[in-house]
Every structure is written in structure tokens, then in C-alpha cells.
Length: 299
Image (cartoon, rainbow, N blue to C red):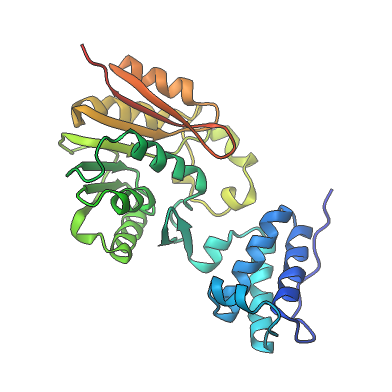
């Protein structure tokens, strides 16, 4: 059983940047953050506290930190020790090759979702084609932005029910320079939309309602419930979306879902019942079946 860490007070002397990282990492590890993650988090927090780029930190790890930097670092470390994610503390998250704004009201995009982007790109014949993309439940706009960054002639519609998510998507599209290639629509899934689209993607809420209380604090306490709760069996949102995909997708189009680690078979069955053939099941870095991609079955 871990013990609660003592408050992380300001550093009494001027440590080097490397020493400060080691102190913060030990403190975070003591608070329950996994050791390797604690090291990464400590580096990110020091860069924020001292206004350093990754290159500047790598080039001068032995430079001392100032008292002001130590005070800022202490405050940031205390927040992370309370299991607030670094992306929430800093207000941004690296996703794919992009740096995206993450607001408290949207799902924090995670590396697992990059598997969805990878799977879609691997199944497209031509990346320079003028594709039409529909992102349902866009959240921060991470998937939309990542796909537009790799598909230079594509255009997208990003849909979300939350006005906060729509605002976050719009901000990230502007930040990435994609405003003229995408439209943000507030709505429930595909209601009132007309196709056809070449690609439909979605990372819908898929956590079973009864499992939300068991999630890590970083997710349970800081991700909005609207972006997590997939109903009793975690499949409610897939049922709604799949019902509309057939009328929205081109006959040679591609639909791809992120799924929970034990949901690939169930989601594939929902798609199969609507006349889709599974094109690929993508695995995340941990080896879990994380993405189900399908195309309309050909007669």
C-alpha cells in the first residue's frame, strides 16, 4: 500500500535541472505515478516551470534552476501528485505530430487513439486524394487534425454534442492551420447530416457505466463523464452510430472506430449486421485490439 506523499515544498538550495527532475520524479512515484511515467512528467513540468524547450533541457541538464523556477515547479508537482494529468496542468497534449490544446471539458487524447489514425492511413490507397472525412464525437479534434495533417487534399466535418468540445476542436484546427479545410458542427452523432463520405471515424464513449468508478484517477477525476460513459455494456454509442453509417458512407468508403480492449468482436458484429466487412483490427502499443475498421460488403 502506498503512503500519501508529504507536501512538496520549495527546494531549499539551487539544484541542477537534472537534480530537480530526480527529486520531482521520486515525489511523483511516491504519490502513485508509475516510475517511468514519473520521470517523463517531471521533465515536462520542469520545462514548463523554467520555460525550456526539449532541446534546451537536453543541452544543459546541469544548469541550476532559479528560486522562482523552483517555486513554480513545486506547485506543478503538487498538482501532478494529486493525479491531475500533465496535459491538464499544462493545457496541451502532444498527439501524432501535433501539439493540441486540451481543455478541462474534453477528453484528453491519448496514444491509444493514434492507433485509429495509423489504421485509417494504412487502409487508404492514395493520401493525396480529395477525401471527405466525418469525425463523430470529435472532442479536442485530435483525430481530425491528425488525419488532415497527413491527407493534404482532404476536408473534414467534426461533430460533437458538447459546445466545449466544439470550441476545442475549432481552436485546434486553427492552431494547426486547418480552418479552411474543416467545419465544426454541434450535434448528436450523425443526426441531420448528409453524406456521402469517404472516411468516417469515431472514438465514442465506450467505458461500461459500472466500470467508471474503477478507472485511474487521471481519467475518472479529470475526463468528462459525457466522453466516458458508454452505457451498461459500453456499446450504446456504437449502436447509434452504426445505424447511420450505411447511409453516410460511400460504397467504397472506410469506417473506423476506436474500441475498448475487449470490445472488438462486439463492434465488428454490430458492423457486420449492417452489411459491413471488416477490413482490419488494429492493435495498440500494448497489443490490445483497439481499432475496428470496415468497408461496405461488396455483392
